Amino acid sequence: MARRASSFVCQNCGAVTGKWAGRCESCGEWNSIVEEQTGGVGAAPRQALARKGRVVPLVGLTGENKEAPRISTKVAELDRVTGGGFVRGSALLVGGDPGIGKSTLLIQAAAQIARLGHKTVYISGEEAVDQVRLRAERLGLTDADVGLAAETSVEDILATLKSGPPPALVIIDSIQTLWTELADSPPGTVTQVRASAQALVRYAKTSGATVVMVGHVTKDGQIAGPRVVEHMVDAVLYFEGDGAHQYRILRSVKNRFGATDEIGVFEMTDNGLKQVANPSALFLGERNSSSPGASVFAGLEGTRPLLIEIQALVAPSPLGTPRRAVIGWDSARLSMILAVLEARCGVKFTQHDVYLNVAGGLRINEPAADLAVAAALVSSLSGVALPPDCVYFGEVSLSGAVRPVSQAQSRLKEAQKLGFSSALAPQANLKDGLKDMPSITGLAELGDMVARIAAGRSSEAQD
Image (tube, rainbow, N blue to C red; front, side, top):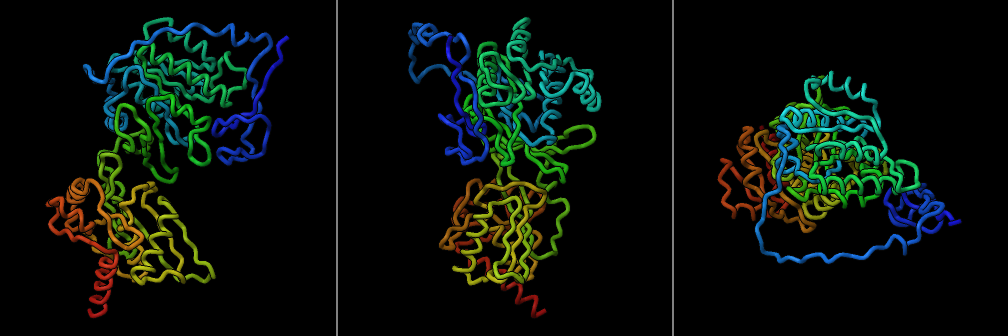
């Protein structure tokens, strides 16, 4: 009788160890290592499973290039993120917090594709068919011809899909609930998630159907399970948002058929998710232009320019170690900006608490926000409100220099569209011939901006 072998696998990163440990050495996660079975009773020897390989033809780099066939969902924001629609034969992974709207978005996309005459299948492993029907009725999608099923067995799902013509779109909600007979581990473990995803990706490549898999996220915001699942699929989309705000951000972090870091903006309403055609107006809708500590950052998310309000509050601290709180930005980068302002510009924050917030709950990862953050901090400390018709963008180096950023022209066009007439930008970007703003001031050093704000304070004092 063959002995059942086992291994210890980290459920966070997929690392395999020979024995159990309280902390994974690969990712540093605690209590994430679980024992999983790697072989069963009567398992066939490896020699019996081996087969003779076949010769694979090799081709050159030159040849006829064909555009990947796509299926447009007629949801402009979703098509923007995917690069123009779902590519036939591709596999996508959609992650997000529970209740953020992943199932709502996908059932709306499935209904739109079904209304265009394409065969669409929605497989739910978490909800019953009646629950999915209730959501579709609430969203007004009952007229769409979408095939529903509540199943968790990968073999049963593939047998159902292969019983007829291949569908154009298959939605699996979610990948963590599936299990396959090829693995002995319980559902949700790394082995089951990896084996189930491999089977679905293989079906997508052989049948030409687009397979969209929903993945849960951990407390750190990463898709739960092994990261190898992200490497197997063609695109990884994150659905972001905050329960306190009505909008949702669909962000592309990997896309073999389109641009990465592209975003789509949706608004959560009683009737489902609605597209936001002008997200800049949404993020600036309730801006108080007369309050110190607020600046407008002309940012860029993928190919889309966005205007975002940066809010800063600098207050005297009663503590020996002042507080530094950040929402929507990198806390380490805030510390760097504070250090540059103190060392290069003489602006002292050592006796003040600093609070920084990106209005609307949006998460910014772009270094071009350095100048806008610095402007908001100096404005709050000095008590001088910044000009309401001015936008800021530029990267700040440790020497205090303002470095150029990419696509400055697109940023200024978006700002001018919303009524902004002036901008503070890096001096090096003026070489690009920026002509879309009536007044553009180039900054070579961060101290130049601090001097401008100080001059505004002096003029207010004289008045």
